[in-house]
Every structure is written in C-alpha cells, then in structure tokens.
Amino acid sequence: MLQKTLLGLALFLSGVMPASAEASVVRIGRAPGLAFLPLYVMEAGKLLEKHLALNGLKDVTVVWQDSTGGNVMNDALLSGNLEFANGGVPPFLTLWAKARGTRSEIGGLAAVSDMPSVLTTNNPNVRTIRDFSERDRISVAAVKASQVAILLQMAAEKEFGAGEFARLDPLTVTMPQAESMTALLSGRTEIMAHFTVPPFANRELKDSKIRVVLRSTDILGGVNTNIVAYTTKSFRDANPKTVKAYFDALGEASGTVASDRKQAAALYLQTSRDKMTIGELIEILGDPALRYSLTPSGTMVFAEFMYKVGSIKVKPADWKDLFFEEIYHLPGN
Image (tube, rainbow, N blue to C red; front, top):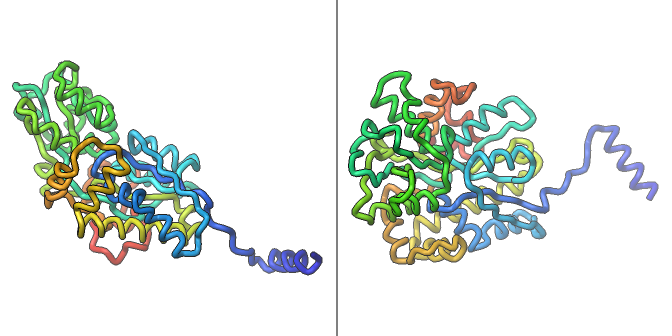
C-alpha cells in the first residue's frame, strides 16, 4: 500500500498521470432514413462492438439514440448526453462555429452519406418556387437550420436575387420526415410541399398527384454530403481508441453498403423498423446518386453560404478546418 501511494505521489509530482480508462458507455445519435444507412448497418452487425474489442475495449455499452433533428443532437452532445452525433451539414457547421475556441469545441470524424434532396408538392399550381403563395406550407426537418432549409435559402437567393435568401422562410414548418410524407400524401393538411431525401421522396413521387419542384442538384450542380459524423474535441482527445473504433466501424459499414446492397438493405430493415419491402429498398439503393463514403463533399459550399448570410459567425479556412486529422488524406471539399 505504501509503495502504491509513493508511486502515485511520484507520478503526480513529475506531472505524469496514469492513463485514464476510456468511456464505458457510448451513445450515438441518428435519425430515421437512408441518409443514416451505414449507422443501421453498424447496429445490426454490431460493428462498433467488434472494433471496440479489436482496440482492447471489450466491456463497452453501445446505445443508439434516434433523434428528430441535428439541433437536438447538438444539445445532447454539448450537455454530455451523447458521444457521437450524426447530422446534416448545416447543424454540424452551426455547432462547429458556435463552439470554436471554447471548451466544447467539436470536429467532424467523417462523412456518412451523400445524396440529393428533392422538393416535392401536391399543389397543381406550383411548378417552380416562384409559384408558392402565402397559404402554402413547406415541410423541412428544421426551419432555418436543417440542410434542406439552407438549400431552400440558396434556391431563393438564386431565383429572387441577392439578399432574398429568406424569402421562403415564412412558409417553412418543422416536421419529422415520416409525418411530413404522410401529410403531403393525404392532401388534407396545410402541408403543400416537402423538401426531403430518399426513401421519403421516392415514396411520395410514386403518387401521381406529387411532382418535383426543385432538386438539390439544380442548386449545387451535383450531389453533396448529407450527413456528417462528429464529436467533441475533448471526447476525442480522452478516448482515442473509442474514436478509432467508431471511425473503423463506420468505414466497414460504408464498405458493406457499397459492395452488397442486398445485405445492407436486410440489415437496415432489421434495425430501422421501416415497413418498405427489401425489393423496394434495393431498387432505391441502386441509384448512383446515393453514395456512402467517409469523404466529405460540398461542406465548404454550405459553410461559405451560411457565413455570407450570417447563419454562422466563423468561416472555416477549408474543409480540413472542420474535420479531425484522421481523414486529411481523403480528397474532401
């Protein structure tokens, strides 16, 4: 006992402390939908548990937390109720800028998915965004904060002119994806349009009364990263093995989606409780516009726009300013 006490005192006096244990519970935030497909594959295949064990962490409890949006996950991350968040690029950028230079500083680990967003409507009088009236309501994941809300601002400025980015904001309402889809298809609510991603857009467009008003590719000129995985710098620094395990598990899950759509679809349906058939899901996953890669794409386009309109107060120098060094070797943007 005396020897242990003296050793501890010697380490304290020398400024060298024993290595602390890593987190025993890992909570991961996500939302429903194919934008989060690799995360459902991770859960079903227990890939995080596998890679935690490979890194010498065998008694870790993994908890998956479904969320309604990126802002909710941001609050949970900052309050210490979440270790890893997975959300849209704008919520990630908002928190990155807000926490920059503070004790709560965050960084991106990797991209989770790239996919196009589609603005659909059941209003026969709406052909372009100019046709929306004050009576129309456009459902988005989060007003002024979600990826589709920022895309709508980009489209408004492009259509109506410089400084008109908020022109359509008063028409937007916040609703979960599944509820928005149900409301749009029913045609019996104030929801006349829904800016969304697969599989919700695919289901909506099977109805002959639903048409496309706008696609994100019309705004951005291509497909961009939709979901980013991120955590706090303090958690990353204190839990290097856990973070490596998460990164490796996400990479393995993304590889499964790319190499075996049938297996990925089965794992998604196993864990998501989604009611679509596996045939329908495999067909959707065959769309080359849906990509699951760790490489960020288009993050700086959002960062520059959000900084220009005042949504964030700090502008990143480049995409590497937003992410941790584990993915600096990738051709991100």
